[in-house]
Length: 386
Image (cartoon, rainbow, N blue to C red):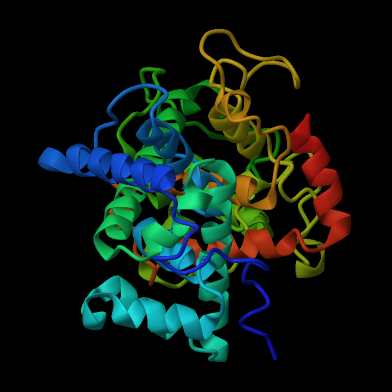
């Protein structure tokens, strides 16, 4: 059985009110809280100035979903993760959270649930602990403030909401980047028409006038070109054998299920033979040109995404260079895959996703889990590191 204390820091900070909270640290803490209060004015969460505590926190916040998944509820995860990591034990985390405002705050009520040692709470609790450890590693001034922050419910909520706002801003910026530049690298696909020998069938994102179709209401399962990218790899041959309209009608009618349990065609290297037998589902997985180009578009810049591997773009530094990120991770790749899947769909906005139709959070988890297989993970990570 999982030990709930195994993930806690070996030497957690002491409780609020002890000598560890020196006057200098307290002044830094008060400066941060004051900046957060000012930032909240008007609900805009502005950053005061470059190089400040808030600016550093803002830069790290924009990485939160890129490292921990686009479905992260950052405000809750940060509050709970830091509370647990600032405690000496899971029982201590419960006790401290319960004492804050007599347990009336919803964040701390949630914390008490997560810190109980029930099997069902372990996965979510572990995610929050990972975020609670990751933040202090990237924000130099945060570790020494943890006892003060964890002991001040209002300050913790301000900090968590600020991070949540800018984490979502980072995700929105990445989605916009993909939407803006996808037209440069989504290919026109031509296949042999199975019904007419010697003729080809074309899947194109271009309109009759030869321009990129920018109306996303036409994307997803409403157009053959986008549907062929979203269809499960194991169903591509069926898609190509049937007239596209017939396949799309079956998806809309619910007769064909294309939910989060499968892996979409855009994730694959399409130069590889398509095999319908499920045991071959890993062949070419995560080698797809669309996925790799989307990854480079976000992490190394849109300008570099269509250049040869290793060639950087011009202009401002990329996300990876600015943050010293030199290696791809399974979660980095899964993050881009989830964003690509959303952009290729006809969903008007992120909040309009319907988990009953496609559960993106489970899709993210499925991708990350596959990287536990070394034979798949090692060559894929090498490819992305190029």
